[in-house]
Amino acid sequence: MGNYIVCILLFCFLCPATSFSSDVLTGSGCSVSTTGYLIDLAKEYEKETGVKMHIMGGGSPRGLADLSAGSVDFSAACKGKTPKDPDDIEFVQVAWDALVFIAHKSNPVNSITQMQVRDIYAGQIDNWKQLGGPDMKLVSFISADSMGGVGQSLTNMVLNGKTPEMKGNSSKQASSAAIWEQLVEKTPEGFATTGFSSARKRNVKMLRVNSIKPTKENIVSNKYPLKRPLYLVIKKNASAKTKRFIDYVLGPKAQKLIASYGSIALAEIK
Image 1 (cartoon, one colour):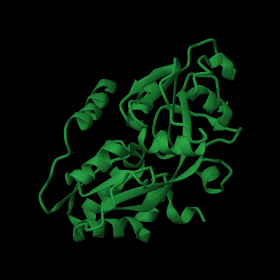
Image 2 (cartoon, one colour):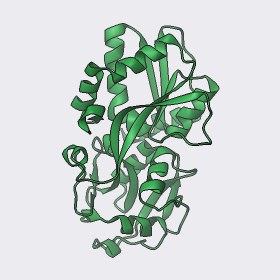
Image 3 (cartoon, helix red, strand yellow):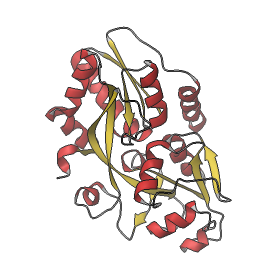
Image 4 (cartoon, helix red, strand yellow):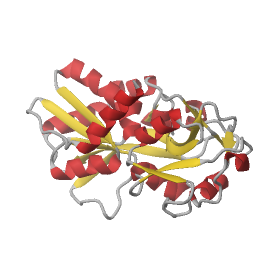
């Protein structure tokens, strides 16, 4: 089953997004968003409207590239707009998330500090015994590029502006949180940064940060740090059908559904 899932994910990376007929909406991008709420919400929208929905992951960079190429109607992003992004796209916040740090379920380490995270990405922590765990190599999964939306959040919120780079404890992977999450699921020595919305659905351990457990309640109450927005991104001249979907996602029914999935709706954080 695990190999089957990985094959599907690799297919999403290797195959370009497909253009579909006018009664279909297509989206790709942030795996935290697609896994956390978007796939479920798209099924509900399809059931209500009859519009066929095709949602692909692949990470925020892939989604934005697909949108720029015109091969999808919208993209999902867990990164904010930067000067490098095209002027003709609009980022619409639709939900909240939080950055989390994950380890294998068997790992006895339960908590980490932001300083320790910085030391991991600097290559200075390369064994779990340095974090109070077993004498076991620490393998930090990072991506071949900037790590997309997770990387932007990690850089801005934890690493004091520094970008994750290859170190002696790093393992370079594709730019998708889904890949890192799956690797940590099956790698006892693994470590990765991802989003709460998707990590809560995986068989991984979300580490406490400064002794605060990453739960929805703690994120909403601001006890847990590292809160961040989730976006849907559209062209400024998006089609009417695309704009209708965005309006639906922002509406009260869809926002209640997002909350019911275990993700964090806009109104849940004041």
